[in-house]
Length: 298
Image 1: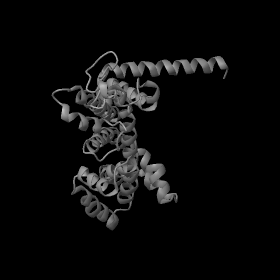
Image 2 (image 1 turned 60 degrees about the vertical axis):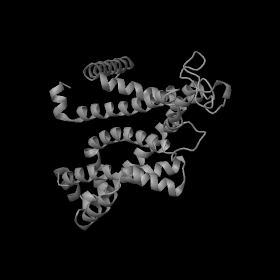
Image 3 (image 1 turned 135 degrees about the vertical axis):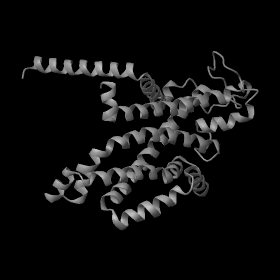
Image 4 (image 1 turned 180 degrees about the horizontal axis):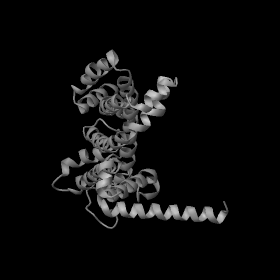
């Protein structure tokens, strides 16, 4: 095949991809808006030192509680720190903690749920009846508060605390999917050919059940960001002077009526981040569901 033919095929594939993206955007504008917002927050998180107009920890007491102005687009807080810079840096904490919590919870859920669903019997009963129900009997945020109160604040402890109860939802989902998939014909064929249990789970079962897990992870990212903001609001998140949306909300609640911009902008950031991942999760669920794709003409 000549270079010109390869170039034409690449251009045709790119054109088809762009048309599909444009069609999906028209059919689901909320998902497109969610993707745009997530990209913006990721850019804030990755390039915060170059995007933020000022040092988020720089104290300027003469400029404390200034309202929105040309010098400070989001105003200043009670210590004169620029709120826009702190919101931008807060995206770094939220994205980092949310991603780590989802990855840790997903890894634990995949391992525990796969073992319980594949082997069944006493192992499944212990994991499903005893282990999962023990964690589900306590609110996840309560477990996280107790863990951080015992271990102390910090990003590492915060991720562990939120993952402590977050893995159960992924494990229950994976267990149910594996229970249904382990009796399928391709699994029986792999088992008849002498494939090991690890190979069957990793190479044959998990690739066929990963779609609902991806949807759960996208929605779980929204929950992790909200949980991080809650923990920071309670003073159990990242210690100051590190900028965090939840910490900013806690600092601004004393000035809710005389300087509402202290609460407004970090609250908007939390709301937009949570909504964005929920929009993406809903869109992925509709797109990965064959029945929804047929009804939408995809």
